[in-house]
Length: 255
Length: 80
Image (cartoon, rainbow over all chains, first blue to last red; front, top):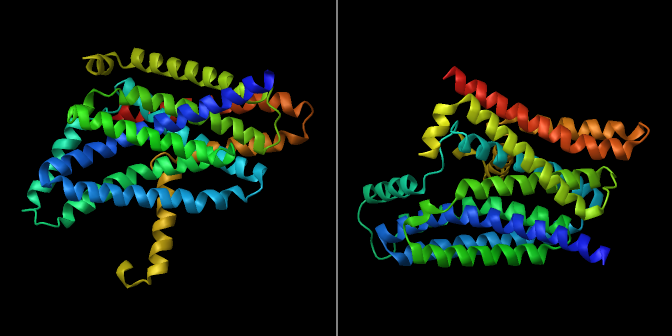
């Protein structure tokens, strides 16, 4: 019973972190793909997207099995360090955005920017190279962070298959929702999702850094839940403090 | 100049640049903080009650590092 509980808490955190990270990055990639499709035609947009997804899947297939061969404690120490850095970077951005110190990611503005860039590039022939490259770059670059998340979380937890499946489901789901809502991606609560991912990545990063240094966490994987609580409380405290110090900026964010 | 370099060198350079941007980028303090956290906990190995100390120190140091990087951004915003 205890074993089942500890395993499930680790799996839940893994699934949540991969799904949210993948969904956030997919929203950003989808904005570019939608702009390319609406402006230059869907054929090249889909071809670019498909090629990028295939390249990302190949990266997981090549590097995943290679990473599994590294001794687990060394792998967890390196992965823990990377996730700690990655998580702190995400959380820092999300905290600064929610307190108004940094501009929020505006999907509408990015959409308009890409459309303007594509229109300036001239007419679109049958095989549109510009549209293909734009869609490929958008999906591949946004997807690279997802690949790193999937590889690090998946290999360290010995659940690469699960992590890759969750990422694929997130891609399909966001793609489907994106096709339905079309240009309304700006209504996705991106910053809240980024904040959650940052907290989850920092929690996993701390956990595996400890494991790599031979720390025995009380309650094993259940400690992840405690770490999530600690980082969520710290995040809340930092946001509240910043909003008090910069009330004018916070009002702008609220409006 | 970079166009004159052989393809493997250019690929290696791009790979290194990707990891540099990914791990260091515009927040070098986070990269340094992660190294300090790992180093500090590794040094605590010889201390008595290592496990209990590490369980407390790891998240506390991470929260401290997060506060420092936020404080740094805050100071930069004030200067503007």
